[in-house]
Length: 299
Image (cartoon, rainbow, N blue to C red; front, side, top):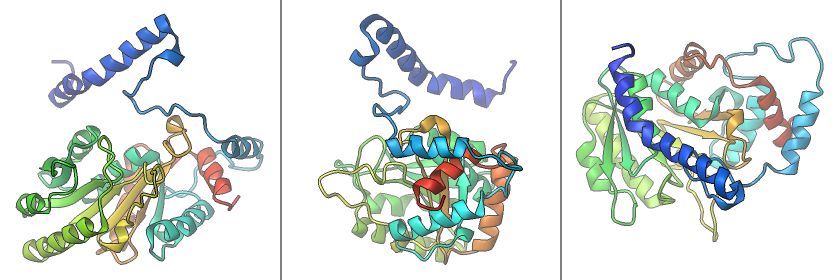
């Protein structure tokens, strides 16, 4: 065996996505890209907004010492401040730059969180259906993804969560609006889950961090509202990216925010900042951090 058994198994499990992507490319070559709708890898089918290209041009023209150098592993302080000002309104919490870490997309953010909190054998609960990569993310850090069934309409099954919570539970991943179902979890269901998680924390004597993966938060229709996670959970982290709302998945830029009242907040932030470095991300892309700051009005 030339590669790790775990990777051999992972390749086998994930190969169907790659095969579908390659088939889409084959069909596009025959019928034209405009005639093939490829939903395999999540590439947006709309161009980034004009404001993005304007900010990108301005930032690319910036000259100066260390403009493309290292910065604090959590990201540029002024960028984190701009994100915090924005996120405080979006998430209904008094955030500062000290609760923000810039990341290599939401995927990077989730891996940073799980690296920071998981010990070998710890469990991560997640409602199903779910984004398939969550399984790999948990495995990356010695954890085990435990799926929890949802109701027929894909809303949270609170009773099922109650049965799944155990002494091994260390984290819960929520994804709302959900990929792949589009379901938005209601404030009532989040509050009910919060009561269960709080009871489990007291019973098992450990913090259980609820992590919300939110790259689709702003892509909602017909007046739908995505409830802010921080209104229901204190031991909570929000991870997001600009891949979907700005149509720039290849630029790998996102952030994570920690609830200001989260248990062990300072240690959690320190662990995630270190994880950003030692997982090989080092820091989020410098150019994209500056672009984000300009789009948020800080640049």
